[in-house]
Every structure is written in structure tokens, then in C-alpha cells.
Length: 308
Image 1 (cartoon, rainbow, N blue to C red):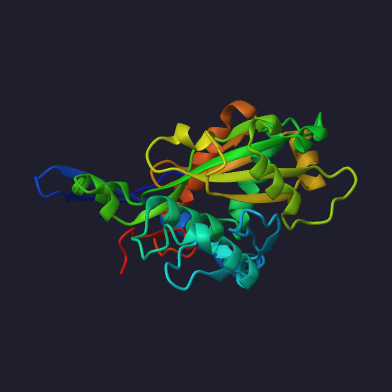
Image 2 (tube, rainbow, N blue to C red):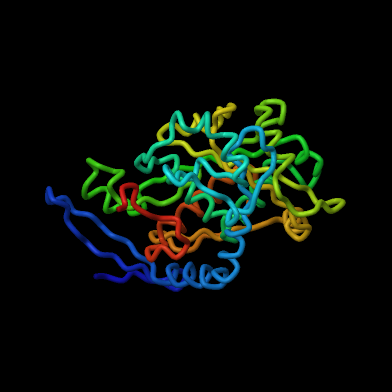
């Protein structure tokens, strides 16, 4: 193993391996970045569990417009899918004639796996920070905070191989590798272009009490399997996770002054840049990099699709 350092970078450990065909693979690891990621996670671990318990989830009964704390939801005892959860026995009974048509024990899919990971992500400060910063620039909230009232932000999410080098060794079955949550390019949509079902969800969702002057932004985390563009095509049958977040005043002040972001990459180390609407993709890539660098899976955003 070799170490590459200079006065402006953190040490990068380089290891050369070979795949089954004898091709040379260069493995990069930055221990300083790994330590910082673990520190960030450990500092928020105490709060994360409580946030996850209180995450508002929509009841699966279409006639129920409310949301319920994640810890209070009831699953179907037979299929136990996270796509079918109820706020009460009454809602479960009312929805049974429709649900029984598809009720069965089914293998985990990329969509259901992704949605489960997104719920965990919503309890992580790093993920919420990314959502808030993206909203400020995409909706121009420093100049027009009222934009948050009639617009949604779609967050495309999926699961991708977490270890690129492992994928290069065996590219034939990518979904058999350990997968990590990944976000795509966010998209702003006017409320006139989303289904009534989604508008109803926003009215019923549990949220912080509104404060005068504080924008409240609605995020729609939409899972996709192959084509990211499909995530933007929301209809009445789309399964999604909605989160409504207040935009803190200190974030808006910092954005007016010029907000900077530090990216962490095993190959390139640390890189700081000033955030603009045009380079938000670096912010999203930075989150994906953090998931890939979380080798110990402390964020709980990695796993195997076909886990027993």
C-alpha cells in the first residue's frame, strides 16, 4: 500500500488489486475523510432515532388524508411491505378490498428498498442540509420566499452499487453488490402539475407550525429503478415520501453572503466551492460520495437487495 500526501491535502492510501481477468484496479482510500464522516454520524446518532420515529408517513388508505408518526403505523401482517401502512385498524379494514388483490409476500424491489433507505436519510442532518440548501437556490428563496408556497421539489432517489471498484471486479450482476442510496438531479415543479392526491398529502402532513417569514418547502422523494426521468412523472399511483421542511433564517442569511460547500472525495481529498444554482449537482454528488465512503454503514443507507 502506498501513501500520497502533500502540504495541501490529506493522505490518500492507494492499493493495487486485480480482478478475475487479471485487470489492474487502483483502490483509493482517504482515512481522514472516513474519520470525519464517522464523527458527523456519531454526533447526530442520538437525535436520528427520535427523528425517524416521528417521521410523518402517509396512510395507505386513499380516503385518509392524514399522516401518522412512523412508529405508530401498522403494516399488513401478511405482506409486510412498507408501501402499505395504516394509521388505524379502521383504515386498514377500509382499504382491504383493494389491497387484497395484490397482498402477498413479495421479494424486496429496488423501489421498496429505496423508499426504506430514504426514510432513514430523512433522519440524518446531512441529508436535510442538502435539501434545505438546494431549495434556497432552486426556488430563489432569498429574493422570493413565497415561491415555496406553490412549488414542490422532486428528489429522485435510487440504490446504486456502493463500491465502484467491487463493481468493476464483477460487473455482470450489479444488483448483487452492496447498494447505497443515491440522489439524482432535483427538479422544481409547480403545484398545478402534481396530482390531487399529492396536494391532499401536503394538507394532511404533520409539519412544524408555520412561522411568519420562514418559507416551508415541500420535497417529494420519488424512487426510480433505471430511468431517472421517470421520477419526474408523478401520477396518482406514484409511491413517494413527502417531507416539509422550514428554511432556517441563518441559512438564508448565509446564502445572501455567499454559501460555500466542502466536498470530500477519496481520490481528490477536500475541495471547497461557492454554491450557485448552476453547480448544485456537486452538492448532490457530495452526498452520494458520503454514502459510498461510509464503509461501516453508520448512516444505515447501504444494504443488499437480496438480503436474507
